[in-house]
Amino acid sequence: MTAAFRTTGSRIALAITLSLIIHAALLWLPYITLPQPRVEFPPLSVRLEPLPTPLKLITEQPQHAKPAPPDDLPKPDHKLSARSESKSMAPMNKTMQNTATQPFPKHLQLSFIAYQGGDGLRTGEIRQQLDINDGRYVLRSVRETSGLASLRNNDRLIQTSHGNIDEHGLHPDLYEIEKITAAGKLYRQSLLDHKSGTLRFSDGSSAALPTDTQDSLSFMYQLSQLSINEEFFTLRVGDTAQLRQYQIEIGPREDVDTPIGKLRALHLREMHAPGSAYFEIWLGLEYRRLPVKYREVDSSGKVTDEYVISAIRASDK
Image (tube, rainbow, N blue to C red; front, side):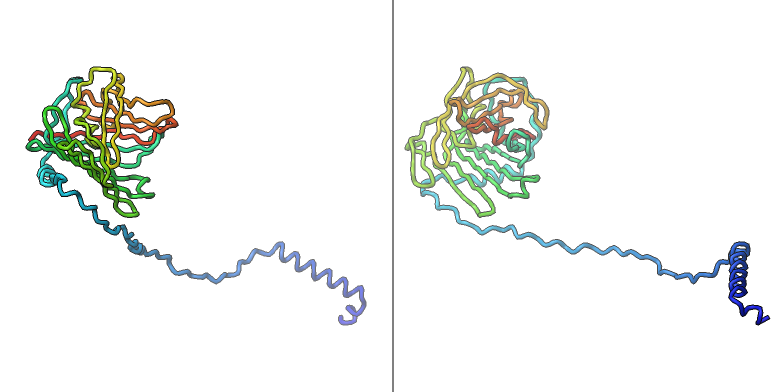
């Protein structure tokens, strides 16, 4: 048999025969699956870890001393304010629409939402409180940034007006303003000396003081005590640097949209030359002609600041 495979042709024939046999076996024999080794993975486990405590930002600012007031400056009525803070106030009820003057309640709180520009961007809140006792009043306003505006700055503006009150309204004799910013505190004041007829400022300068002068805070409330029967009237306002005289135009009655509903209001506007800045104010006819909206407009006609009433509370106790 060995001699049969010695020739080349025989060896080729054998190779072909073996190849046919192998391929036939692969095609016709049953498929055999070889066992595969199984790898066991450990079970997945999850553990919740508390986040690290965030670092507290240091917001304390260096204290700056207030300038010493003159010797004859009226002392602020801090006891009056402290007594009134414990008084509970209820939301003020609406009255009939009326342009006649009405007395102030003994304790009054107004809250406003502050907006910047004409696009309604909310920038903060304003809380104002008026307290009256024994012929004296204290009117305090605190404006603070809130919302997204507070991410850029956390400014605070505090205004306080002190003075006498009678049947003709408010007669301020001391006006204070304090600005608290990231840079620190800034305090200014003005003394309205009615005996000498002098308006004195923090920098030592002075001006003649007309008898009906209001300060930058009290004028908004004194408007409710004026007889508004003409087309316009004169308003004198002193701040911590100068005395201004405004001619106020009496406009129409309008509906004002506020967070406490639609209010009927009397629209007042500062008379101004074209291309000049001015302010507007709306007095609530159903709320003793108290301010319910205030707006400042720059020389280009763009609204820069706007305050809209969000709460009115009062008490006569």
